Image (cartoon, rainbow over all chains, first blue to last red; front, side, top):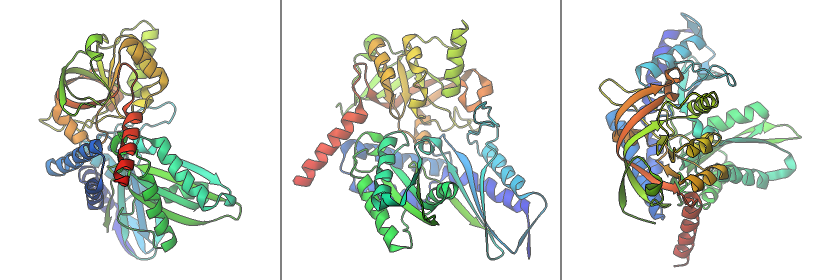
Length: 280
Length: 193
């Protein structure tokens, strides 16, 4: 058993909220630059140059890359040998978000009630996902997620007869419908399998994977490449003004599912796809 | 489509608006107002009760933005556009009152485009997600209404050479449709060559 004081979690999350919003991950930076190098649309090249200029400016001047500093999506992989002390874990996570968003001059974008609205004023509560894993470490990932792209995401409960083609069509249809709204070039997180709730989480977790990585199963790795190519044949382009670069990456995560179903969730993310990870 | 940048001094009169065409890259200078969903809802509810808007809508330009808070010594935080389509419910009424300029990103409904054609409206696109760069062109920022809405409060901004592209012009031409079609044609020609 390893004791971890929850104040350690609070401190880490505070710092990670600020850093994730100011410094675009290296995989995204490299991915966007690689897209710029093979872009053949003239307007698209200009837009990509400005997008690169923007994340470099944010990096250098230590300011938020985008004004939508998102809902704080917090993923914790907690080793089963860990014993948290000093308070409630979820309170500690929210305190880290509260401090990070306040001290880091990040936007407070969370409404207390979905219909009656009302800003909570400190960007809490965070969207917290906890997985229990072997070991005595805690892996924390902070992924601020904007809603321009979140709003363009979709979930469908396919029947098995829809097959692979049904999944491919749904991914393309979702990207097509999203058009210019989610700030392309986008990252496409796809979840396939599981059930209604777990498939959405799989799609979200797909967005946490570096865009230069592949699904370990060669079948799905090939599907990731194929879908990226197909999406980039749509011609939507950066900001939707036309161009090759509609997506910088497609990540697919799968789960075993029921004999009667084949759920699929497509979680769209923008060119400011942020995530930062630390192991305690 | 014009390749060079054109400087435009606000306010956006109908005459000026009609000289702006789809695809024009424009640098805006002058006063603009921020408003998102919550502010639009409150403004139109107030109008129905006979309460005037917090700013004069005639020839005004509304920027769909909720900036990050300003750090000490700075005018404003990051300030890129939000998805304009969420304001489609209220935009025709705002345009009919004279607020003919809109800055945002993303597609618009036909009802908005119809109002733009009728009242000489222009929908400008700023680069979504480029909030750090765009903030550099905002020289003054004053909170003028609905402070309780936090990032969604209405702010009066003074912008200098604020870079935008005309996405939909007063004739209803739409860059999202034309730009994509033009690219796909060019791409096809490149493939053949």
